[in-house]
Image (cartoon, rainbow, N blue to C red; front, side):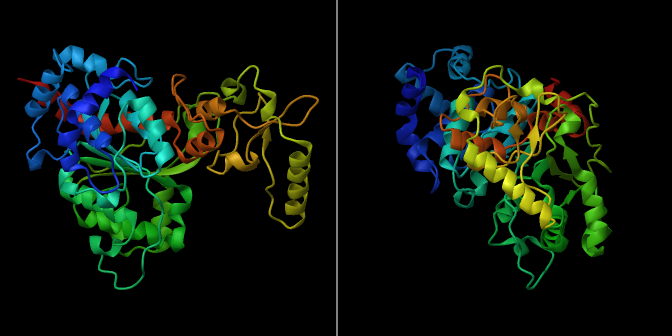
Length: 420
């Protein structure tokens, strides 16, 4: 951490301690405040009397604030991933991981005004890159304290819902983390929400999970590309067929990975009739483009592990399972999907090597495979780096989505707001 941020934290910690929710840190509150002040955005807990001028005055006394431009430069000059100079719209980043969705939205001109991530190692990586330590347990954060925002984004965990007593309302989601997303949307009323999940969400619990999610959000005044009649009373197959149209593949957006995710875009009722998802770029992909020239020999897998991979693949073939490992070379168009378990044995993506056993991706290659910028600082722990990239998103896909969201929902609002 640089001396400037240390001074800022030391100065503001006594004030921030009054507003720290259970499961979060004073640093999360402080970082939100100072970045919001630098970007002229709403402060966390503003409705409880937190005042930007009060914070600025305290920083001035400590010698940490002289001019607005200098303050903003001091906050961002050491950051690997810099926010846009003039953010055109605001968003919050929930279940943020290491900030892959944030990067994509910043690349489209958005400014992050709040972030939340529960896992400690991911929090550290997020902070290292964005200079913004995320809030923790989302279930403990008072919704009214979260700053207003244009867009809510989140890659939320998929949890089953109870089948008992369905009332088609937000109460049906209690006890799940999705309930917290729904409550934030209901209270803060963002214009748009983007929810990302594995493709398996479509068939999870025979379509019931997706149905509850969409019934909940449409009941509080939001629309998506699926007709309300299908959401309310359609068959599981009808709902699933429509939901499949929300699935995007990373390889279609220039990323050499066959990663498929569902991206549910929701908007306030009346903003539009239909969201036009971004079209594939049709650019040629090649695994060699994300590989390092001279990877360390330690990434070559052992004879024992290689023998085990081959044996399992043969056994799976005999038993009709079909998958054991995935091997590619530099000329392959794409890899299998990298997952959070990649650190265990690398079986889903092995790189062919002439005259020796195949190797795993390096952490930098894993970052490249997800489309993270070269300047992104990944965890020093290889295990954590693989987990974090496996749990993250393909940044170019998010960038394409965020540009489409901006063009279709926010551009006119942003332009009118900027007029005197």
